[in-house]
Image 1 (cartoon, rainbow, N blue to C red):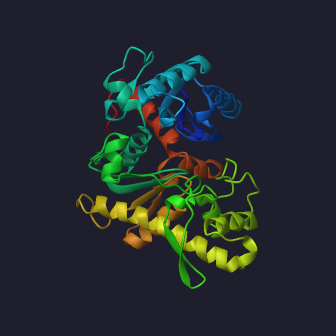
Image 2: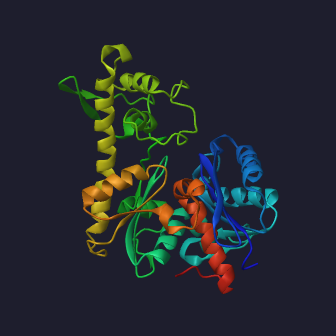
Image 3: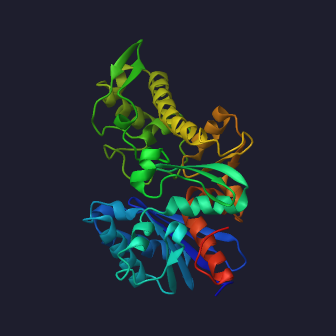
Length: 357
């Protein structure tokens, strides 16, 4: 089993991500499937079917998740157990659920409504940070996804974070609820400069961060997998039309250069929030100036820009995992899935449960 193929799964509330780690230690396939879990667990079942068709079966599966937060569930413990139940019913082979610093928990999880359940909830950031800690002596991990940003200092072979759960990580700004696809524009600023004056932004779900980064030309082509805020097309013109509504205007009220300028300002405001959170983490003095920023997630183009602002080297997560050119980009986009597969492989090789360096 130590040399067996392992599939890493990251079950989110909006996407299902899977990474296939072959017996020779290379990532051969990585997929991301839209999965609006808030609509029902049948969405997860469908996404699992699609992922298995594309990625194939395996004798071992490593699972991490954030989908337990979906308001489909009364609470997180229920979400962890129900998601685990779906996975156990749909996947063949050995399953292990990542519980952060506690290691891996084997099913059934119904009997573990204690520390391991709490540790399984939203532990995917810890998997990514643990992989980085095993590859670099020190680094600042910045994983910018479609919805959230995870920030973690790593040094001495382990994550050096103050928060362990979402509430603590939000308080410590190691979790910043902003991403490059699904975040509503109204969450990025209360006002913005336009046509020579400051204008307020409407508290309406008219446009998302995907519209901003599409207008700046930085959004990766396959990043935006859910319907636009208005259900309309995903073109620069359509994005500008949605953005115009945010300030009470129509597309025809200004030129495309004006809408791109507004999008750039709002995108910079988003990056500024992430930079401020990173500055707080760095102010703890754990990392020397030469320690790099490791960028992961679909929004790591912002992490690369952030590294320049922080005057630190930049390392792309894709360079830390063995993947071919066709797989590397998606491996970095789906970093927790790749990381949890690697961690389970290491656990099986060592014959133990603790996930350390």
